[in-house]
Image (cartoon, rainbow, N blue to C red; front, side, top):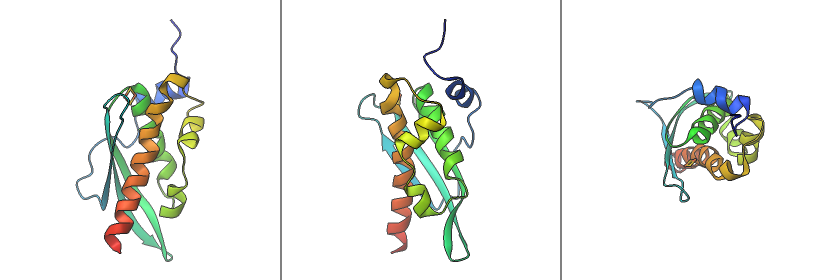
Length: 129
Ligand code: FES
């Protein structure tokens, strides 16, 4: 049977990047999916470089479906090394496109990853103010 997911989604689901809790995170994004009740955490470590704040390290914990795991994995790859402001601009569509698309029925799952990342960044900025 052919999977409803792209090869890339399956690859990230089987070998998730940056998975696991980060003990000394500077900020933790937390987001729940109202559609299915699944939960995701995004951990970030921030470093100052040339007056810019960079995401030096990032990891995730996802209690969700294959699409949620693949999108979390992808969002950590997209955000790593970016400035906080660049990472804030990453959208749900960027994540889905980088995975060669998601089945329409699974698009809500991809919301978690981008929202979790944004939540971590916003909390970090609020803490600093
Ligand atoms: Fe819950 Fe996908 S079904 S995140």
